Amino acid sequence: MAREREWKGRTGGSLTGQMALIVFFRCLDVRLGYAVMACVVPFYMLFSRRACNAIYRFFRHRLGRTRCQALAGTYRNHYAFGQVILDRFAVFAGRRSFFEVETVGDAHFRRLVAGEKGFVVAGAHVGNFEICGYLLDSGPKRINALVYAGETRTVQENRARALERRNVGLIPVADDMSHLFAVHAALQRGEIVSMTCDRAQGQTRTVECDFLGGRAAFPVGAFALAAGLDVEVIAIFVIKRTARRYTVYVRPLAPAPPAGEARGNRERAAQYARAYARELEDVARRHPEQWFNYYEFWNK
Image (cartoon, rainbow, N blue to C red; front, side, top):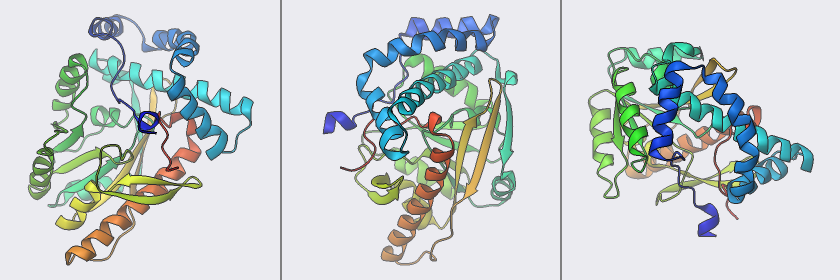
């Protein structure tokens, strides 16, 4: 069971291959990479059975698709995942202006940016959450993005360089949990904290939520911080529409009871988690080909 639920979350490929992609996209259109990716995906699916099976079951059992529809959806899902990875390397190669972004619900984001208090941005492994850091402008309010510390050196260095130009700093997740102090300090300074909130792997504090016809555990850490510091939370989902266009959906999470004693804050955090799960379910149903959680997500 533990092995079935394991998902590394690290960008594939060697350092040489990743650097070659950056050089490639400095000279050539990223859409050429898409064409190659369309041919590579079937071979990847053959040799990555665990991830492939998890997505197949997502289409088959959670969305109720036929076997043929689930198989076709699994291919489209892997192809879309390859595209968003290539888009990341295109940005690293300096092609940020190639992409266009439309924001739905931008007024919510701008209202919080204009305020004095910090706030939490809850993302997900749906679409291309990372690219919003390269494309969106948060003005003078700094964004602190919580990131996986085990990425390759190529990704870490190029990500940090590209994001710093957009007033985005990185907080690597540490085994000793010291990143929580950095997150807490950033919110107290009135800054933005951004993190994905859909993977409970390795998390000790979770909330079990109804999600796509089953029960799934969601990490509650980000929501507990927001409740304890009495700051707002918005969910942001970034969906790829065409080769060049992304749509960013900004959705404020439902208000919870006022912050108070510890018991009240726990309930408030749980309400945030449930509201987030509802928004994520809506996006996953609308864009299942961009659901990128390649492990057994639901509780048995």
